[in-house]
Length: 187
Image (cartoon, rainbow, N blue to C red; front, side):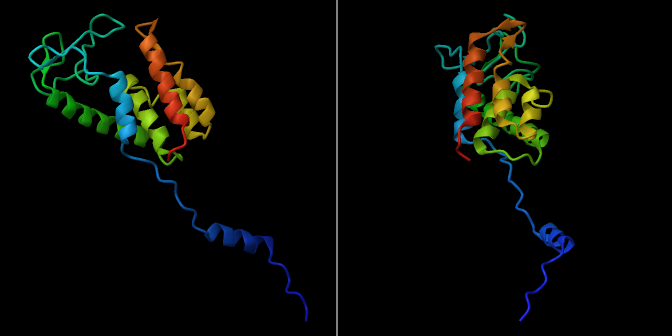
């Protein structure tokens, strides 16, 4: 009995190419841990005695963009125009706008990172970062994440600690929390 001849390199390569590799599923929604992180740093400030929430000026500029609820800026979802010093919302309106804004940010993050392998914790941290900065498409941390350099991406969070040119302690704490979540293991 003779040994069968070993398969040729070409036939092995064809077999390997025919193997379907599972695609890494990228999270498309933010988990409760991600929502909790956003809420922790976008706390509903300026609750009035009547229970209404009122807008407050940006901590960096002392003015625009005015913010209300869980960090909402820009258009006033429940009134005319944009959010300003006279904007008032109910808590339910603040919560509804949070859901809307988080879904929008999650969609934008998912579009930018594409099929890059991403854990739920990484996705949550990236959405929190984008929710606050709007910079997911231009940040070096995004390029590093897509390239698989997760340690490098985590280090990049800390670079985003300024508002209107001023280092802000709240942003230092937020970026540290985002980096910690980004590097945590839960998938």
